[in-house]
Length: 172
Image 1: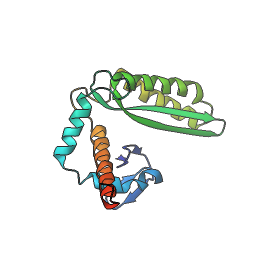
Image 2: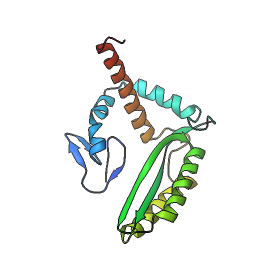
Image 3: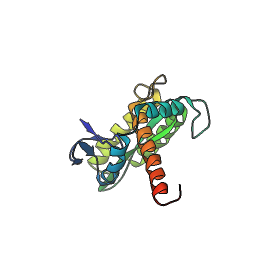
Image 4: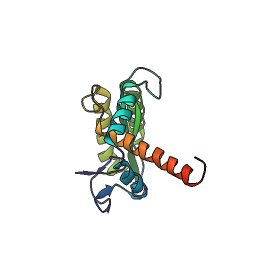
């Protein structure tokens, strides 16, 4: 299966393609320039920033790391409408598990109310949160995940773009 080059979401079907990049929807497609810019960031810069984040304090609770990208998954449905998604967040495992619990409880009560999608998607999202909470699958505490690498590369590209913009406008 393919994944979105911007957000990392799995693309089951459809999606948008531009040259060698794939995107899950139009919002991610609009950020394609940052994906391209992120590929030009020197590997040493990415590695240094990634290690700093991974071994640093949690940005949410200020507790000890390791810090990585933890995704929580939700679903909401009402009669003939279902919406679902995932929320990646840079945090420690404990903060990630709390978010997964909250989205799991939300989905448990509000995900089932549509036929057939609510009945099909809710167990999937609950299982994804359970797997994240238990640590069966997810970021390894010893090494940064590919999701963290992608997030760091994009962040560095945006920072570099902001510097270029301020220099071009005479603010730098």
